Length: 132
Image (tube, rainbow, N blue to C red; front, side, top):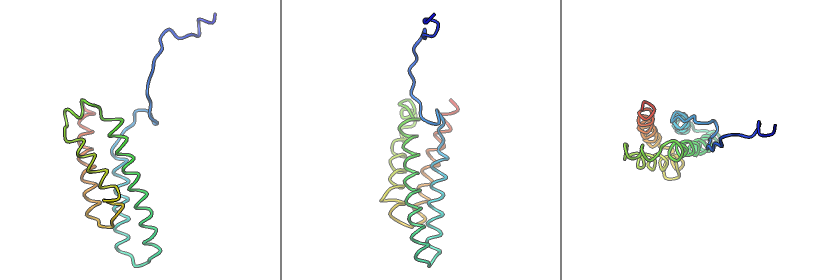
């Protein structure tokens, strides 16, 4: 009777939450928020508003890095890096653009635009891998 509930096959799996759902759009949305904070910061003369804009920009920059890291470390596998050898460099550049030497450390909108461009390049490769 107890054998009825014992599994005949044991299966091991790794699961991120939400399971298997990856999309560079998450990083892009946060990067668009970073850019918008920079634009609003640059357009304002209110010091309190500018302080809030910087704080939000830095939080969103960190979220960009986290979303990119998940793609880099969890979604992309060795065959992807073999087929797209520029991927490691793209991720390295993008995460640096979202870090202290990038959008966290400046209010220069062109840095945010560079970050968005890198995310778009990663996104193109991502969607190519989904076709296979």
